[in-house]
Image 1 (cartoon, one colour):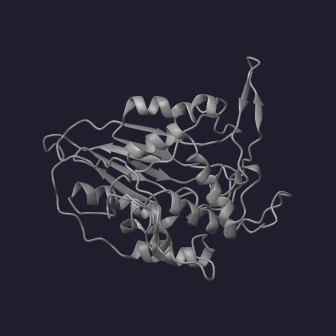
Image 2: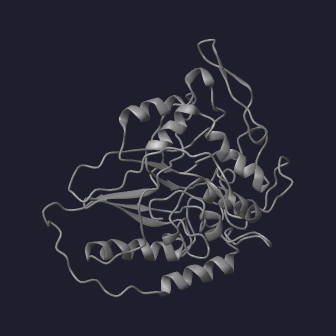
Length: 332
């Protein structure tokens, strides 16, 4: 595989070797690893561990795919060169320019994702393992929501919608997501079919979130947004009825793991998806499904425009489809 400059096809990278694994058609067991919070809490790449300690364990597991359940980077978490360990030792972070301050520009957000690829053992894991990715808050900043204005002296850009557009573009460039599931606003929520036994419902719990507040959420708002809730209620019936939804195979380059409070170790991420085993031997009857209602998608677009969702390209920027065209995905 080669990476090619979209503006100049003559400019390409050296060839890279990887392994593409796609879901099988047989009713075999599906084994996957899942985590999140990569390079968080001040723990970066320490070369004495070969990069990320978790990567060695994940390589040994050799999962069918890897689910990164959000916080694929910590754009609001700068690293320092050394961290004192409880046993008296020292954890020595590799620190790049992009990881020395909070991300605000597009290049700084790109640098968050590029940093993870400096870990040798992590790149080895990515080269052989398919991935499914979500995003959460730290791709942009801690606990962000659409329309938020920051009161944080570290940020010169205080409009979170501007920051989120840049973060979403960098996320799309470094984290492969099939163009077949993306609408003009860069939709993230989708269902991934993993052979005949598993359907993985991947949610987006940031793009449509209402403002932070007390525990009680406003009617019709909350975390998912109306369109995503309607999709989540409708899509399982479509799957059971044999109607294809927005399908995606896991992309062949996942993005890492980490553990809160432990240098580079794995930790189960917060569950932002639903993995549903499908019946064996025809346990679930195939029944006709009602025609798909296009209205939720219309409502989704209307909501995105009304609330100023952070997925519109800035003036002069290419659309999300063009930025994703260089990503590696088995759908291509």
